[in-house]
Length: 299
Image 1: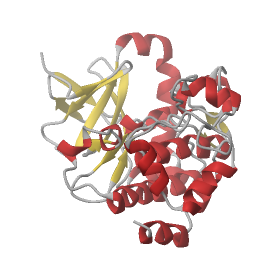
Image 2: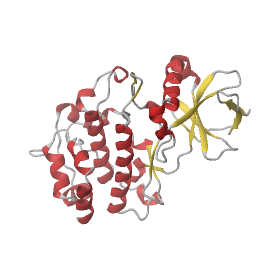
Image 3: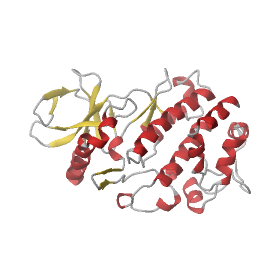
Image 4: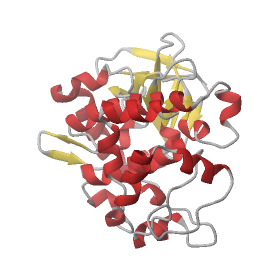
């Protein structure tokens, strides 16, 4: 059975019968007549619980003048407009079709070889700089990603472009109304957010930088988590306790390729990670072009 949706003006389009991607909350369908557009339809059980809240947030994201530039941003799969089914029930939203390979593949010790056969350290840095540039624009607009899941960052193998998806979970402030980010992987969360009900907590720039620091570390260290300890506690417990094994007095750094990569990172980069627990300040240093040139010059 074909799927048909329409926008608020009543204009209808037919969707591909089967989704090309789906998760616990929604499925994403292609639009055959508009190849550059996809539609995200929330699952019925999700709509039953949160339809009004989701619609309010999506409408705010797609209509607030302050966020208008993000709708056209080439690095964002930002909601363009809400979609309704044939009965007039709200189902989800349309967005630009994003292309690329998920960053968790790029950061995997073996999987990256298939999708990124020519990947080298300058290429990894180029992806990270592209991502940081987009995040800087989001933060300037008062948007906090919150859910730093590497699967939500798509890297184009043919360029240094990174596209961010699943934008509907992010935190934003529209005319004084804060729409929070209710989800995140515990091993990407700052200590002050551990064990908290995220739907009731405002994300801050500091908590963003903590998560971003972990993402940068994992991208540079072939997926190794900075708070993972050999023969010790897991990342979440170490985050809660503020134990950074790569810091002064730390232990449990894995031997082999991860140790070699860590030892060959520029001293300035390692210093920023070691001196701060948690290592938020690495992101601020990284954003300086002199720091980026320094890193690339040491490769």
